[in-house]
Image 1 (cartoon, rainbow, N blue to C red):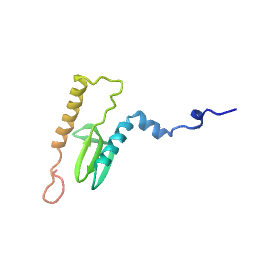
Image 2: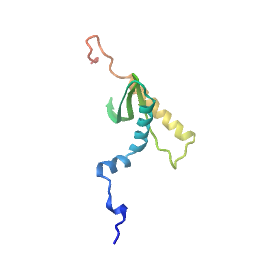
Image 3: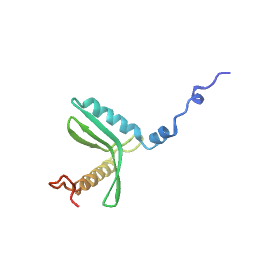
Image 4: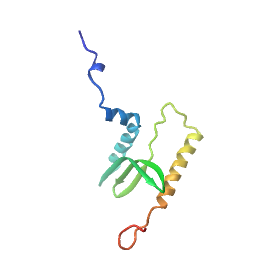
Length: 114
């Protein structure tokens, strides 16, 4: 009796969850950034944060060759890419940008303003 290979292997639950949460486009984007970097690369995928009582996320937070990079990744396979989709992405980017402008400014002592 021969065993079907699909029955012999299973993904670990954390991996299955990450895939269901959309990690694949994030990993692909991170790999592209790494390959585009020449002098240094550090990244943190799936950053979740709260700012002024609003929960949000940044799919990729990276430092590439000394530049700070923030990415929003979308898997648009099987979805429309019309004006509505691009409008929604632009609005999400604008909200993230607006929140970053409202961050605490450092004081001369190196601590954030309170």
